[in-house]
Length: 227
Ligand code: GRF
Image (cartoon, rainbow, N blue to C red; front, side):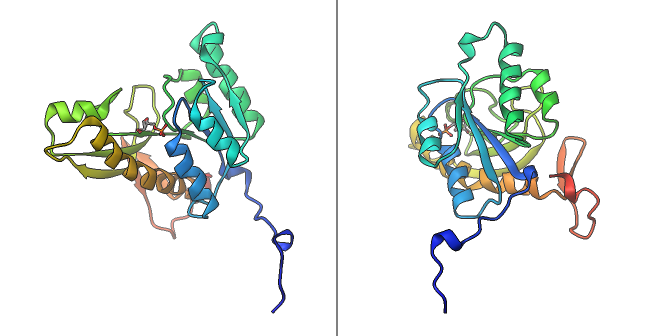
């Protein structure tokens, strides 16, 4: 058996089509889940760029530690949402990003941004959509008194938290839950389903029927080459 050191190992050449851009505003634990999934090859993709709209976002350090290129575009320095979004598109296009993953990105995106990446923007939300869209979804679930909530990965469309659903995971609510304890258990599921949903989208073999994200049989290869 011949010994190979790490310099002998050829890194797989990932097609352009699997280049991700991740947009964050804060902690970046979902970003970390994506970084880890790529590192352990549970997700066959590369993260071409991480962009934060907040210079102090701890997620930027996570990306830097993983050797991923980062950019900070502080939205307060732009005259309008359109100008900010145009700058985002420019940075993402410069790195040939094909799929944009929102991971705790706290800005609404303009139609111009959505048009720049048609059917290629994903978001993760901490509830079973369409229940409890918007901020504080875990608190909303507790206050409403639901017994089951969860996490949703969806394609991003114009209306907030309302695009076609790709994957969901359910999380039972416990009587003694606080927003913090419930958020913690939902987060475990978020970290599991986000990389899985990204892989599904990249693998192709799906289409949107009405509001539904529908996968079709492997032998029906027409749309499998989408990414
Ligand atoms: C997550 O709960 C996500 O569902 C929501 O914002 C939070 C971001 O957390 N969109 P993190 O920055 O990924 O840790």
